[in-house]
Image 1 (tube, rainbow, N blue to C red):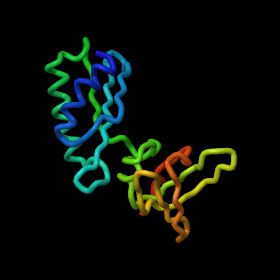
Image 2 (image 1 turned 30 degrees about the horizontal axis):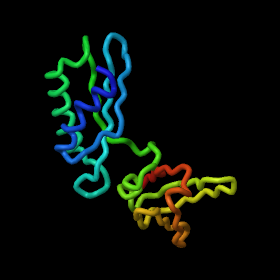
Image 3 (image 1 turned 30 degrees about the vertical axis):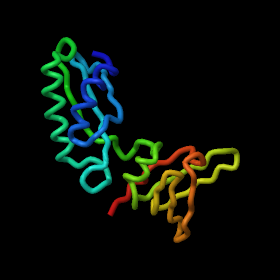
Image 4 (image 1 turned 180 degrees about the horizontal axis):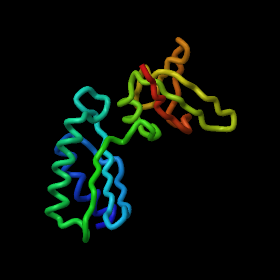
Length: 152
């Protein structure tokens, strides 16, 4: 089974749990295959999938792979969220990280870098609180955006 077939198999399963497939990876791991399924979604609090959703998805995906006789030989299945270290690319990524600290790099020759907390998200762009000052950027103006890990 290739990535496309795996995505086709998994998508309706995770959709039933109100999640979406962010990406899949299939890699050799010794004599086994490592099958990684990364999920995203709004989750109960609107900030991404929670652990219960990931656990439910893992069980359902595992059953489906067993029923589909996934590949030949043994495999290890890992199911997780898309992760904090992934770039924010789509409006939904910004919306799901509302309130979090992000680092944004503006596109273009005069690119500026902003570090601020996401305060508002709409269809056109995102508004950050940068040192107490609201700063709005359209999505087209954003070259790169990453959530910054904060330790309490």
